[in-house]
Length: 180
Image (cartoon, rainbow, N blue to C red; front, side):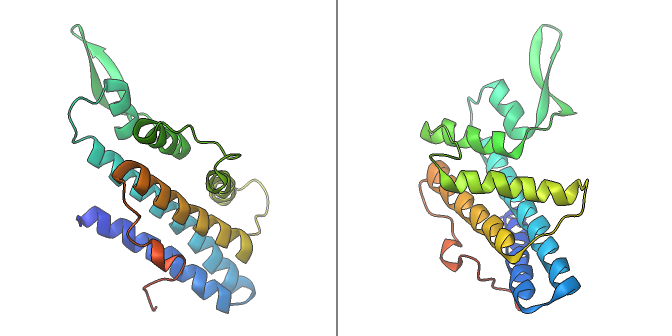
């Protein structure tokens, strides 16, 4: 496991631990733990997806437009050739996940036929409402659990699609290895 893989795993364990702590807390303390679980959980998912994308970039023969999506860099043109620039080009997390499924499994994801993906899309909206608040955001135990389960399912499905093997920590589901 690389250092970045360890970091991704640490974020995932922290998110699950904050959720566990939220289940034992009340009021403002519970809200703080739920907020932490949501934000760190989505950070863990992004870290895992970024790690997968970086690993795939090591393969030869990846078309430039796919490299752009995997590395989140703009394509530039100079002196008669196209190349990947250092300029950031942000893609939605769901675009990158959909790309992985289509590229490696020929699967077009949608929330109706892939329920875990629909749950993930709802979870991303929840995270976005907390990161970019326009009104008071109330996060419950149930929607935090749905968010974490949808991340767990996403990681399981991505791992099976890209690597043809289960996500290493799937058996733990939402049980954290941490004890703080």
